[in-house]
Length: 409
Image (cartoon, rainbow, N blue to C red):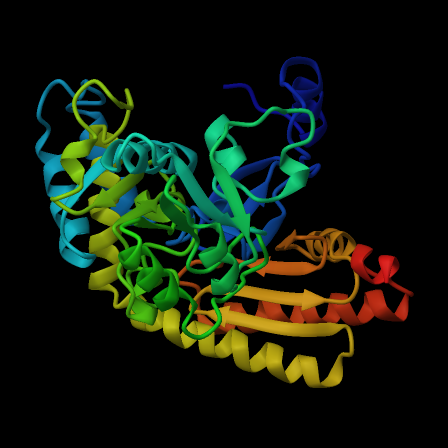
Protein backbone atom coordinates (compact mmCIF):
# COMPACT_ATOMS: atom_id res chain seq x y z
CA UNK A 1 0.00 0.00 0.00
CA UNK A 2 1.34 3.40 -0.97
CA UNK A 3 2.26 5.98 1.67
CA UNK A 4 1.54 9.69 1.59
CA UNK A 5 0.46 12.70 3.59
CA UNK A 6 -2.91 13.36 5.21
CA UNK A 7 -3.65 15.73 2.31
CA UNK A 8 -3.13 12.86 -0.15
CA UNK A 9 -5.53 10.66 1.81
CA UNK A 10 -8.15 13.42 2.03
CA UNK A 11 -8.01 13.82 -1.77
CA UNK A 12 -8.60 10.07 -2.21
CA UNK A 13 -11.68 10.28 -0.01
CA UNK A 14 -13.02 13.35 -1.78
CA UNK A 15 -12.85 11.56 -5.12
CA UNK A 16 -13.75 7.95 -4.30
CA UNK A 17 -15.60 7.64 -0.95
CA UNK A 18 -19.28 8.47 -0.37
CA UNK A 19 -19.26 11.53 1.94
CA UNK A 20 -21.86 10.27 4.42
CA UNK A 21 -19.54 10.67 7.44
CA UNK A 22 -18.42 13.93 8.97
CA UNK A 23 -14.73 13.09 9.18
CA UNK A 24 -12.00 14.95 11.03
CA UNK A 25 -9.00 15.98 8.89
CA UNK A 26 -6.74 13.36 10.45
CA UNK A 27 -5.40 10.20 8.89
CA UNK A 28 -4.67 7.63 11.57
CA UNK A 29 -2.07 5.01 10.71
CA UNK A 30 -1.15 3.22 13.94
CA UNK A 31 -2.54 2.53 17.39
CA UNK A 32 -1.15 1.04 20.57
CA UNK A 33 -3.08 0.92 23.84
CA UNK A 34 -4.76 4.28 24.39
CA UNK A 35 -2.63 6.13 21.83
CA UNK A 36 -2.93 6.61 18.08
CA UNK A 37 -0.57 8.25 15.57
CA UNK A 38 -1.47 10.18 12.44
CA UNK A 39 0.22 10.13 9.06
CA UNK A 40 2.53 12.97 10.09
CA UNK A 41 3.66 11.09 13.22
CA UNK A 42 1.69 13.08 15.81
CA UNK A 43 0.61 11.09 18.87
CA UNK A 44 -2.88 11.40 20.39
CA UNK A 45 -4.34 10.18 23.67
CA UNK A 46 -7.58 8.48 22.65
CA UNK A 47 -10.43 8.57 25.19
CA UNK A 48 -12.98 7.47 22.57
CA UNK A 49 -11.10 4.62 20.88
CA UNK A 50 -12.87 3.05 17.94
CA UNK A 51 -16.17 4.82 18.73
CA UNK A 52 -16.45 2.62 21.79
CA UNK A 53 -15.30 -0.55 20.02
CA UNK A 54 -11.71 -0.67 21.28
CA UNK A 55 -12.49 -1.46 24.91
CA UNK A 56 -9.00 -2.91 25.39
CA UNK A 57 -7.28 -0.09 23.53
CA UNK A 58 -5.74 -0.28 20.09
CA UNK A 59 -4.25 -3.59 18.96
CA UNK A 60 -4.42 -5.50 22.28
CA UNK A 61 -1.77 -8.20 22.09
CA UNK A 62 -3.96 -11.24 22.98
CA UNK A 63 -6.49 -10.26 20.30
CA UNK A 64 -3.77 -9.62 17.72
CA UNK A 65 -2.19 -12.99 18.48
CA UNK A 66 -5.49 -14.89 18.33
CA UNK A 67 -6.51 -13.35 15.01
CA UNK A 68 -3.03 -13.85 13.55
CA UNK A 69 -3.11 -17.55 14.45
CA UNK A 70 -6.64 -17.98 13.12
CA UNK A 71 -6.12 -16.17 9.81
CA UNK A 72 -3.38 -18.68 8.97
CA UNK A 73 -5.69 -21.68 9.32
CA UNK A 74 -9.30 -20.75 8.54
CA UNK A 75 -10.62 -17.28 7.72
CA UNK A 76 -14.26 -17.93 6.92
CA UNK A 77 -16.71 -20.77 6.50
CA UNK A 78 -20.50 -20.47 6.35
CA UNK A 79 -22.77 -21.23 9.27
CA UNK A 80 -23.91 -24.43 7.54
CA UNK A 81 -20.82 -25.94 9.22
CA UNK A 82 -19.74 -26.13 12.84
CA UNK A 83 -16.75 -24.13 14.11
CA UNK A 84 -15.34 -24.94 17.53
CA UNK A 85 -14.37 -21.32 18.34
CA UNK A 86 -17.95 -20.13 17.77
CA UNK A 87 -19.29 -22.75 20.18
CA UNK A 88 -16.67 -21.92 22.81
CA UNK A 89 -17.42 -18.19 22.44
CA UNK A 90 -21.15 -18.77 22.90
CA UNK A 91 -20.46 -20.83 26.03
CA UNK A 92 -18.29 -18.09 27.55
CA UNK A 93 -20.92 -15.41 26.93
CA UNK A 94 -23.67 -17.62 28.31
CA UNK A 95 -21.73 -18.35 31.50
CA UNK A 96 -21.01 -14.67 32.13
CA UNK A 97 -24.57 -13.51 31.54
CA UNK A 98 -27.94 -15.16 32.21
CA UNK A 99 -27.33 -18.47 30.47
CA UNK A 100 -29.01 -19.41 27.24
CA UNK A 101 -27.86 -19.24 23.68
CA UNK A 102 -26.22 -16.84 21.20
CA UNK A 103 -26.96 -15.75 17.64
CA UNK A 104 -23.88 -14.15 16.10
CA UNK A 105 -23.80 -11.32 13.59
CA UNK A 106 -21.58 -8.36 12.70
CA UNK A 107 -22.84 -5.10 14.20
CA UNK A 108 -25.13 -3.63 16.84
CA UNK A 109 -27.78 -2.84 14.24
CA UNK A 110 -27.72 -6.46 13.06
CA UNK A 111 -28.01 -7.74 16.62
CA UNK A 112 -31.01 -5.47 17.23
CA UNK A 113 -32.60 -6.55 13.93
CA UNK A 114 -32.33 -10.14 15.17
CA UNK A 115 -33.89 -9.18 18.50
CA UNK A 116 -36.79 -7.40 16.79
CA UNK A 117 -37.44 -10.40 14.55
CA UNK A 118 -37.24 -12.79 17.49
CA UNK A 119 -39.70 -10.71 19.52
CA UNK A 120 -42.24 -10.84 16.71
CA UNK A 121 -41.68 -14.53 16.01
CA UNK A 122 -41.94 -15.54 19.67
CA UNK A 123 -45.17 -13.71 20.45
CA UNK A 124 -48.65 -14.27 18.94
CA UNK A 125 -49.09 -12.95 15.36
CA UNK A 126 -51.21 -9.96 16.40
CA UNK A 127 -48.40 -8.77 18.64
CA UNK A 128 -46.03 -6.71 16.52
CA UNK A 129 -45.43 -3.46 18.44
CA UNK A 130 -42.24 -2.62 20.34
CA UNK A 131 -41.92 0.19 22.86
CA UNK A 132 -38.62 2.09 22.72
CA UNK A 133 -37.38 5.27 24.39
CA UNK A 134 -36.66 8.87 23.53
CA UNK A 135 -32.96 9.64 23.10
CA UNK A 136 -32.32 5.94 22.61
CA UNK A 137 -30.24 4.66 19.72
CA UNK A 138 -30.47 1.18 18.19
CA UNK A 139 -28.84 1.42 14.76
CA UNK A 140 -29.24 2.73 11.22
CA UNK A 141 -30.87 -0.13 9.33
CA UNK A 142 -34.49 0.51 8.42
CA UNK A 143 -36.00 -1.30 11.41
CA UNK A 144 -33.46 -0.01 13.92
CA UNK A 145 -33.82 3.53 12.59
CA UNK A 146 -37.56 3.25 13.29
CA UNK A 147 -36.73 1.87 16.74
CA UNK A 148 -34.51 4.89 17.42
CA UNK A 149 -36.78 7.55 18.95
CA UNK A 150 -34.85 10.56 17.66
CA UNK A 151 -36.53 12.53 14.85
CA UNK A 152 -33.21 13.71 13.37
CA UNK A 153 -32.52 10.16 12.19
CA UNK A 154 -35.93 9.88 10.51
CA UNK A 155 -35.73 12.92 8.21
CA UNK A 156 -36.40 12.01 4.57
CA UNK A 157 -36.95 8.31 5.28
CA UNK A 158 -40.69 8.12 5.86
CA UNK A 159 -42.89 6.26 6.04
CA UNK A 160 -40.93 4.32 8.63
CA UNK A 161 -41.42 0.67 9.51
CA UNK A 162 -44.63 0.30 11.50
CA UNK A 163 -44.91 -0.93 15.05
CA UNK A 164 -42.59 1.26 17.12
CA UNK A 165 -43.95 3.44 19.92
CA UNK A 166 -41.86 5.87 21.95
CA UNK A 167 -41.87 6.71 25.64
CA UNK A 168 -39.70 9.12 27.65
CA UNK A 169 -36.72 7.32 29.18
CA UNK A 170 -37.44 6.69 32.85
CA UNK A 171 -41.23 7.15 32.63
CA UNK A 172 -42.97 3.93 33.67
CA UNK A 173 -46.45 5.47 33.51
CA UNK A 174 -45.92 6.40 29.87
CA UNK A 175 -44.85 2.82 29.11
CA UNK A 176 -47.91 1.44 30.88
CA UNK A 177 -50.19 3.65 28.77
CA UNK A 178 -48.63 2.41 25.53
CA UNK A 179 -49.02 -1.31 26.27
CA UNK A 180 -51.97 -2.95 24.52
CA UNK A 181 -52.95 -6.32 23.02
CA UNK A 182 -50.61 -5.71 20.06
CA UNK A 183 -47.46 -5.07 22.11
CA UNK A 184 -44.74 -7.71 21.78
CA UNK A 185 -41.74 -6.28 23.61
CA UNK A 186 -39.95 -3.42 25.30
CA UNK A 187 -36.54 -2.49 23.85
CA UNK A 188 -34.29 -0.30 26.00
CA UNK A 189 -30.66 0.61 26.59
CA UNK A 190 -30.10 0.08 30.32
CA UNK A 191 -27.68 3.02 30.02
CA UNK A 192 -28.29 5.27 27.04
CA UNK A 193 -25.05 5.83 25.13
CA UNK A 194 -25.54 8.07 22.10
CA UNK A 195 -28.34 9.77 24.04
CA UNK A 196 -25.80 11.21 26.46
CA UNK A 197 -24.67 8.47 28.93
CA UNK A 198 -28.06 8.59 30.65
CA UNK A 199 -28.28 6.34 33.70
CA UNK A 200 -31.70 4.82 34.51
CA UNK A 201 -33.72 6.36 37.36
CA UNK A 202 -33.92 4.17 40.44
CA UNK A 203 -36.47 1.40 39.94
CA UNK A 204 -36.98 2.08 36.24
CA UNK A 205 -35.51 -1.14 34.86
CA UNK A 206 -37.17 -3.20 37.60
CA UNK A 207 -40.44 -1.51 36.69
CA UNK A 208 -40.01 -2.46 33.04
CA UNK A 209 -39.35 -6.07 34.08
CA UNK A 210 -42.53 -6.04 36.15
CA UNK A 211 -44.64 -4.60 33.30
CA UNK A 212 -43.19 -7.12 30.84
CA UNK A 213 -44.04 -10.01 33.16
CA UNK A 214 -47.55 -8.73 33.88
CA UNK A 215 -48.38 -8.35 30.19
CA UNK A 216 -46.38 -11.34 28.87
CA UNK A 217 -43.99 -9.14 26.89
CA UNK A 218 -40.32 -9.71 26.13
CA UNK A 219 -37.82 -7.34 27.74
CA UNK A 220 -34.87 -6.60 25.43
CA UNK A 221 -31.74 -4.85 26.66
CA UNK A 222 -29.58 -3.17 24.04
CA UNK A 223 -26.10 -3.40 25.58
CA UNK A 224 -24.24 -2.65 22.38
CA UNK A 225 -22.46 0.23 24.11
CA UNK A 226 -22.71 -0.68 27.81
CA UNK A 227 -21.87 -4.39 27.63
CA UNK A 228 -18.73 -6.52 27.73
CA UNK A 229 -17.26 -5.06 30.91
CA UNK A 230 -17.40 -1.34 30.20
CA UNK A 231 -19.37 -0.52 33.35
CA UNK A 232 -17.22 -2.60 35.70
CA UNK A 233 -19.56 -5.62 35.51
CA UNK A 234 -19.75 -7.88 32.49
CA UNK A 235 -23.07 -6.32 31.55
CA UNK A 236 -24.82 -3.17 32.72
CA UNK A 237 -27.98 -5.05 33.73
CA UNK A 238 -25.97 -6.73 36.48
CA UNK A 239 -25.69 -3.39 38.31
CA UNK A 240 -29.46 -3.18 38.62
CA UNK A 241 -30.50 -6.74 39.44
CA UNK A 242 -32.82 -6.93 36.43
CA UNK A 243 -32.40 -9.72 33.88
CA UNK A 244 -33.66 -9.30 30.29
CA UNK A 245 -35.16 -11.97 28.05
CA UNK A 246 -32.95 -10.88 25.15
CA UNK A 247 -29.70 -8.89 25.14
CA UNK A 248 -27.77 -7.44 22.21
CA UNK A 249 -24.00 -6.93 22.14
CA UNK A 250 -21.51 -5.48 19.66
CA UNK A 251 -18.90 -2.68 19.56
CA UNK A 252 -16.32 -3.88 22.12
CA UNK A 253 -17.36 -7.54 22.00
CA UNK A 254 -14.31 -8.56 19.96
CA UNK A 255 -11.71 -6.05 21.14
CA UNK A 256 -11.93 -3.95 17.98
CA UNK A 257 -12.68 -6.70 15.45
CA UNK A 258 -16.16 -6.57 13.90
CA UNK A 259 -18.55 -8.87 15.76
CA UNK A 260 -21.92 -8.86 17.48
CA UNK A 261 -24.30 -11.18 19.26
CA UNK A 262 -27.86 -11.54 20.41
CA UNK A 263 -28.26 -13.59 23.59
CA UNK A 264 -31.54 -15.09 24.72
CA UNK A 265 -32.85 -17.89 26.88
CA UNK A 266 -32.99 -21.51 25.75
CA UNK A 267 -36.80 -21.31 25.91
CA UNK A 268 -37.07 -18.30 23.58
CA UNK A 269 -34.20 -19.12 21.19
CA UNK A 270 -36.01 -21.78 19.10
CA UNK A 271 -38.47 -19.13 17.85
CA UNK A 272 -35.68 -17.83 15.60
CA UNK A 273 -36.21 -20.94 13.52
CA UNK A 274 -34.10 -22.01 10.52
CA UNK A 275 -34.59 -19.87 7.45
CA UNK A 276 -36.03 -16.89 9.33
CA UNK A 277 -32.76 -15.04 9.97
CA UNK A 278 -29.05 -15.28 9.19
CA UNK A 279 -25.77 -13.36 9.00
CA UNK A 280 -23.27 -14.56 6.41
CA UNK A 281 -20.18 -13.52 8.38
CA UNK A 282 -21.78 -13.84 11.82
CA UNK A 283 -19.63 -15.76 14.29
CA UNK A 284 -16.85 -16.28 11.76
CA UNK A 285 -13.60 -17.83 13.04
CA UNK A 286 -11.74 -14.50 13.22
CA UNK A 287 -14.47 -12.79 15.23
CA UNK A 288 -14.88 -15.82 17.48
CA UNK A 289 -11.18 -16.03 18.31
CA UNK A 290 -11.07 -12.28 18.91
CA UNK A 291 -14.15 -12.48 21.14
CA UNK A 292 -12.66 -15.30 23.21
CA UNK A 293 -9.35 -13.46 23.56
CA UNK A 294 -11.17 -10.31 24.67
CA UNK A 295 -13.05 -12.09 27.45
CA UNK A 296 -9.90 -13.89 28.58
CA UNK A 297 -7.83 -10.70 28.65
CA UNK A 298 -10.44 -8.88 30.73
CA UNK A 299 -10.38 -11.68 33.30
CA UNK A 300 -6.65 -12.35 33.33
CA UNK A 301 -5.80 -8.66 33.80
CA UNK A 302 -8.61 -7.98 36.33
CA UNK A 303 -9.97 -5.25 34.09
CA UNK A 304 -13.49 -5.30 35.55
CA UNK A 305 -12.05 -4.08 38.84
CA UNK A 306 -9.77 -1.64 37.03
CA UNK A 307 -12.74 -0.17 35.13
CA UNK A 308 -14.46 0.46 38.44
CA UNK A 309 -11.38 2.29 39.74
CA UNK A 310 -11.14 4.34 36.56
CA UNK A 311 -14.80 5.25 36.96
CA UNK A 312 -14.02 6.60 40.42
CA UNK A 313 -11.17 8.70 38.99
CA UNK A 314 -13.34 10.19 36.24
CA UNK A 315 -16.25 10.80 38.60
CA UNK A 316 -14.13 12.43 41.30
CA UNK A 317 -12.22 14.69 38.91
CA UNK A 318 -15.30 15.77 36.98
CA UNK A 319 -17.40 16.33 40.10
CA UNK A 320 -14.60 18.55 41.41
CA UNK A 321 -14.51 20.39 38.08
CA UNK A 322 -18.28 20.92 38.27
CA UNK A 323 -17.92 22.81 41.55
CA UNK A 324 -15.67 25.38 39.87
CA UNK A 325 -17.22 25.52 36.39
CA UNK A 326 -20.78 26.82 35.95
CA UNK A 327 -20.96 25.36 32.44
CA UNK A 328 -20.98 21.79 33.81
CA UNK A 329 -24.60 20.78 34.29
CA UNK A 330 -24.21 17.12 35.25
CA UNK A 331 -21.60 14.38 35.55
CA UNK A 332 -22.70 10.83 34.69
CA UNK A 333 -20.22 7.99 35.13
CA UNK A 334 -20.39 4.20 35.45
CA UNK A 335 -17.11 2.41 34.94
CA UNK A 336 -15.59 3.67 31.72
CA UNK A 337 -18.84 5.16 30.41
CA UNK A 338 -18.47 8.89 31.05
CA UNK A 339 -20.82 11.75 30.21
CA UNK A 340 -20.18 15.42 31.00
CA UNK A 341 -23.25 17.53 30.22
CA UNK A 342 -22.53 21.19 29.52
CA UNK A 343 -24.58 24.33 29.00
CA UNK A 344 -22.44 25.16 25.96
CA UNK A 345 -22.14 23.38 22.64
CA UNK A 346 -19.43 20.74 22.57
CA UNK A 347 -18.22 20.64 18.96
CA UNK A 348 -15.55 23.29 19.47
CA UNK A 349 -14.37 21.50 22.61
CA UNK A 350 -13.83 18.32 20.59
CA UNK A 351 -11.92 20.31 17.96
CA UNK A 352 -9.74 22.11 20.50
CA UNK A 353 -8.97 18.85 22.32
CA UNK A 354 -7.90 17.31 19.04
CA UNK A 355 -5.53 20.23 18.43
CA UNK A 356 -4.05 19.44 21.86
CA UNK A 357 -3.69 15.77 20.82
CA UNK A 358 -6.63 14.42 22.83
CA UNK A 359 -9.52 12.57 21.15
CA UNK A 360 -12.99 12.86 22.72
CA UNK A 361 -16.58 12.88 21.44
CA UNK A 362 -19.62 15.12 21.73
CA UNK A 363 -23.15 13.76 21.52
CA UNK A 364 -26.55 15.47 21.78
CA UNK A 365 -24.79 18.81 21.12
CA UNK A 366 -23.80 19.38 24.75
CA UNK A 367 -22.56 16.08 26.22
CA UNK A 368 -18.86 15.28 26.12
CA UNK A 369 -18.83 11.49 25.87
CA UNK A 370 -15.80 9.44 26.85
CA UNK A 371 -15.60 5.68 26.28
CA UNK A 372 -11.96 5.03 27.22
CA UNK A 373 -10.24 1.68 27.24
CA UNK A 374 -10.63 -0.50 30.32
CA UNK A 375 -6.84 -0.74 30.56
CA UNK A 376 -6.26 3.01 30.43
CA UNK A 377 -3.87 3.92 33.23
CA UNK A 378 -4.96 6.28 36.00
CA UNK A 379 -2.20 8.67 34.94
CA UNK A 380 -3.52 8.68 31.37
CA UNK A 381 -6.98 9.43 32.74
CA UNK A 382 -5.61 12.40 34.67
CA UNK A 383 -3.62 13.59 31.65
CA UNK A 384 -6.72 13.51 29.46
CA UNK A 385 -8.89 15.25 32.04
CA UNK A 386 -6.27 17.98 32.48
CA UNK A 387 -6.51 18.74 28.76
CA UNK A 388 -10.31 18.46 28.61
CA UNK A 389 -10.94 20.70 31.61
CA UNK A 390 -8.38 23.20 30.35
CA UNK A 391 -10.09 23.36 26.95
CA UNK A 392 -13.52 23.92 28.52
CA UNK A 393 -12.12 26.75 30.66
CA UNK A 394 -10.51 28.33 27.60
CA UNK A 395 -13.73 28.05 25.63
CA UNK A 396 -15.67 29.82 28.37
CA UNK A 397 -13.07 32.59 28.55
CA UNK A 398 -13.33 33.01 24.78
CA UNK A 399 -17.12 33.33 24.98
CA UNK A 400 -18.28 29.85 23.98
CA UNK A 401 -21.65 29.54 22.26
CA UNK A 402 -24.63 28.46 24.38
CA UNK A 403 -26.14 25.12 23.53
CA UNK A 404 -29.05 24.82 21.11
CA UNK A 405 -31.33 24.12 24.06
CA UNK A 406 -30.10 27.21 25.93
CA UNK A 407 -30.67 29.29 22.78
CA UNK A 408 -34.26 28.05 22.47
CA UNK A 409 -34.89 28.92 26.11
